[in-house]
Image (cartoon, rainbow, N blue to C red; front, side):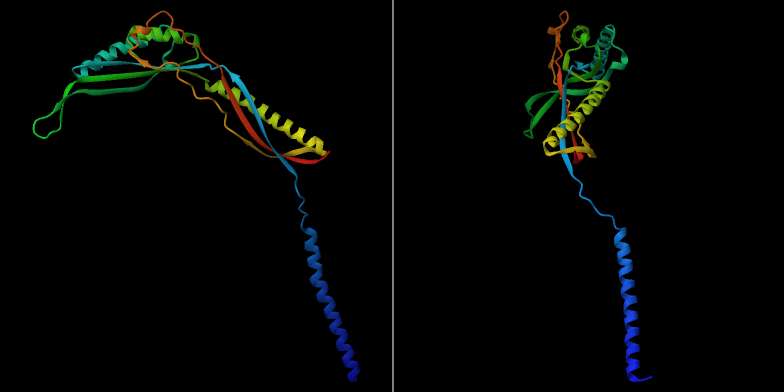
Length: 259
């Protein structure tokens, strides 16, 4: 074999090897490229929907109690128990059940009289005068028409303290209102999105995310606060409820596309 023939054979072999290598490199790359999905851009619109409703409270909360004072803690406690038992009995006679009454606090505190500077150390000297017993009960009822009668009966039986009278929603009614407002808020968000998309030639094609907010229920405001309520013991103390404005909002991100 001549040198010229050897050179041509070597060139042919190199060409064949190069062709195989190039095909081996390109083939997998092309196959891999075909397997990678094309990431299409997703068009969305984010809208906040809102709903509100004026709701009449259906739960009354009344916090009242008995304060008694005596020389000894035992006498103060005994007197307090007697007056509180009479108070609870008078409330139950109106149709309030024991499940609607609970003790919110009970305290026994010493009563001191500051007699002025003591001899020797220049400090003050406190004289123990007796003890005060405070017993508070919480009444929660859906019988709103009895609130005035409850106050009158309690004060007439021995209660000398009314700390709070307020109205709010029962858990059951709050859940009902929440469900209704949630549905209305989502419909409001959908309506807003459709109105915004219509002039743009777009429409809603799906939902990407929904973010809910807590129900905005105003805190119950006290209608009365006071102490030593003997002056209130008159027929049917007038107590009136008022409606509450409750709102909720939702944030919805809609998927959109051409009409």
